Image (cartoon, rainbow, N blue to C red; front, side, top):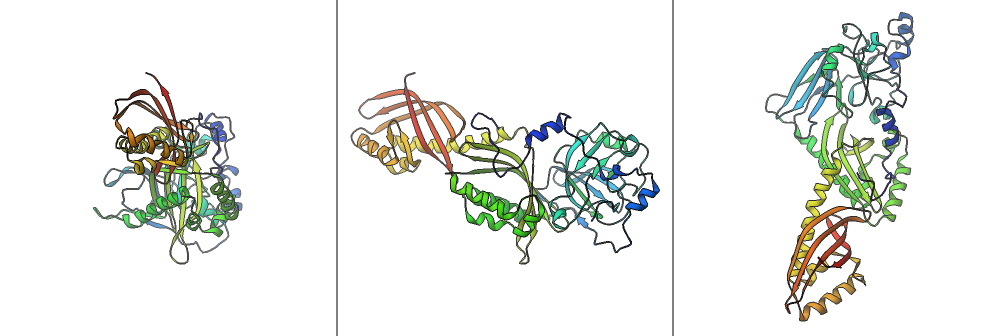
Length: 457
C-alpha cells in the first residue's frame, strides 16, 4: 500500500517486511533443514535419530473437498503411494500434475525432532532456495515449508526445516528424514507454478470425491465465520474475542491471548474507526482443523497495513469452530489496486447519494452522509452545517449539482475525493470550482468528516 498516508506497522500485524526483503535479496541467513544436521548417508546418525519403538499415532486420510473456495492451485502429497500432485481448481478440481516423490523413512505423522517422519497437515511454501544446497541430498532447488504450523505447536510437535527439495540422483521411496523429495528435473518443471504461500497438503492417503459431488458445506460455514470475524473487528465489538480459543491461541504462537486481547482493546478505545477489507478467501481442511487464508487491508486513522493472513480453526468442546492460531505473509502485489477498486465503488455510491440529496434539498438525506463532528467551510459540527443549509435552501433551493473529473485517493483520515463541481440554485445563482471531501469508513458506510471548496475553473 502507499506509504504517503502513513508509514506504520499495524500493531496486530507482526509481519517483518524488513526481514522478508532481506530473504528475497539473499542477505538473510538460510535455515538448515532438519535433515542436513546429520548426513543422510551416515547409518550411525540415522540410528541415533531414530525414535524408540512406539505405536504410531493415527495417520490422516483425506478426501479432498470440492468447493468454490479452495485455492486456485495447491499441492497434495500422498505418503502411502509416494505420489505428489499439483491440484488446480478449474471447475471441477483436477489433478494437473502427478509425480513420484519420497517422504520420511518412518511411517506416520511427525511428532518430534529427528523422528524421521514427514508431518501431516496443511502447510505453506515460505521461500525458494537455489544456493548453498548440498546437491547430493537436495539437488539444486528446494522450497521451505512452515512446519511447525500453529496447530502443530498446540499439539507439542517439534522439529523444523521441512522442505520440498530435489535430489542429486533418482529418488527412492521413503528415503528422507522428514522432507518431501522429488526428482530434481520434476521439481524444476514446477518452478513457474510454485511460490511463496502455495498451500501444501500432506496426508497418509489422499482420495478424490466422486464426480460432481460437492463438499462445500463445512468450507462455506468456515468462510462465513471469517467474514463475521472481520465485521466484529471492524465494528470494534467485544464479540470479536469470542471467535478465539484463548488457551490454544496462547500455545500456538509467541503471544498470549491475554496480551493479544489487551492490545486490541486499547486500539478499539483509541481509534475512532477501523476498516478491515478481505479478499480472495480460501479454505483447506487439515487433520482436525481448517485453514482459511485471505488478503487483508487494515486501516485506521494514520494507519494502512496490507498482509496475506491465515487463520487456523478447531472445534471447541461444544463443536463450535474457534480460531486457535494465525500467521502472516506478504500481500500480493496487486492488493492496493484491488483495495482501491473496492473503495472507489463504495465511495462513488456514497457520493451519488450525497449529490442526489443536495440536488433535492433533502435535509435528512444530506445530513445522514455527514459525521456529527464534520466541518464545512468554517462551520464546525453537523448542527452548524445543517442550520446553514436549512436557511439557504428555504428561500433558494438548489436546482443542479453537477460533478466531474472525480479523483479518489487514500488519505490519513480515510479517503479523499476531489472533483469539479457546478452548482445552480432556483434564483439563477451559479458557482463553479473544486470540491474536496474527506470521508471516513463507519461500518459499511462512508461518511463525510470534512469539506473544502475552491472557487474557479
